[in-house]
Image 1 (spheres, rainbow, N blue to C red):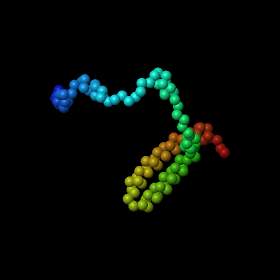
Image 2: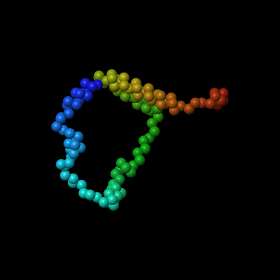
Image 3: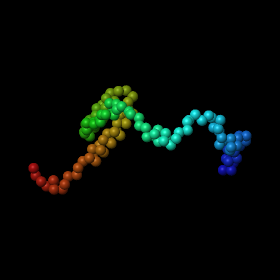
Image 4: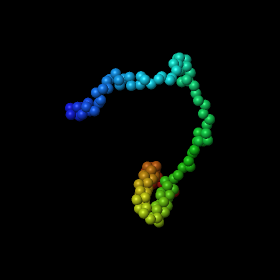
Length: 121
């Protein structure tokens, strides 16, 4: 640790002092104007009028997709990729999507009441 400190200390130029470091930007002219408290408050409170774009006004609601439809889409994509050359990694990647969709479908199932097994329709 001491060796590291000595190494870092030796890399710092000796001719630079802490005062030089603190006054590093003292030669840069100050171009900002001195603002009064009222001007600062007015600048902060000033609101910019932004015209809404079509994206801002529309609330895109996507139609719900069932797990069955999603699984069918994964299977269709798998069949397409199997017909292509050098797509085996993509086909293998679909397994994760299929598994996740099946988990979502399983978790969304509602447990039946025990009495539903004894009723006859």
